[in-house]
Length: 416
Image (cartoon, rainbow, N blue to C red):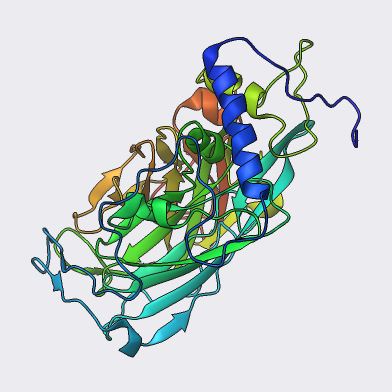
């Protein structure tokens, strides 16, 4: 064994455990069974396979017309099918969270094909001191990188699963329409890649995640395989009256729950490979009690050297996703001046919220106007999770203090 104090997966009683083991064995044999197929259709399938769409469109087939059913400032917009071959193509260079790729806040040109490339990486990470886990990642980070496009654009993703992987993976975009969010069209085994194109017809922020089928879905998601996409309205964000909103800085926070198995002495187990922990993981996941809740992959990722920064007067956009559980964002020392709680930019933002809700499996967005310098804490206002699990981010703002907003009139001293 490569490490001390490691364990391998142990056999547990019960039909679910036996099924999980059989599923994994089939899964691994299928993924390792020979060279990638010559066609776009993988030469393997899962025992709990994703259902196939009744009518999978052929490559290059015309897209169905997609209508925006509500818009609080412009009225409905209908997107006509495009000849994709004639559209401008742009390559978006994805970056690791909490940062966003370079993008325009508004765009009034013709729809574009935005090309992105994601490489799957299965790698061991140290979630917290002494707590190790094999993470399943898009581009090596938890969460995966955020994609930014405009309404009406096409997203063309090349998803690469290198031969160094052990497992089959795919991607389900909550922003897309059909084919299980693309999940049934993107199943790639080790040594394969696939290209998926979909049209971003709904403005908002949305989760994406791996969803291979059956118990593999929560297993992959709780091992970090999720991220977000932001589809901006073409004329940008608006306040409830329809006036333009601009942001000066933007950050992406992916909240992640982990379920790490423990040994009899209470210590966290460590495994030799991505697949070795499956049986123990499923038992830990069934408790529904996370062992770790983190922002951006590991404990303290957005604190210290990773803290967020701003200046007094900045409008700071924060995109917050949670692919598996609810969350309750709150900025200690500030407010959500504009909040798209359910992530839909077709809806007018709510104003001046102290705390809001990110539903399980979704993303939301908020704009915070920084009015005072100092340290702010961004957390989920389940305070036990925020402080016992250290699920929080630090934002430090610089500028001049405004005594009109807050002043210590009298320092602590003896009672008079």
